[in-house]
Image (cartoon, rainbow, N blue to C red):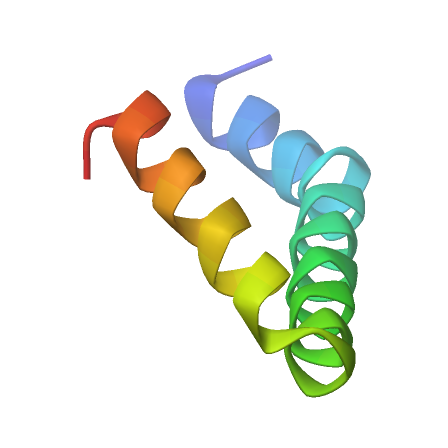
Length: 53
């Protein structure tokens, strides 16, 4: 197998699930922002401090 074959395998096998999880997390955060905006902003602030944005 060449590097190109591994890249195609990675795109087909692993990446769609990761993209779906990220999309679901954004939808969840937006829903939380609509229901409890202060809590959503607090979560976002903690996330920024942990990840070093």
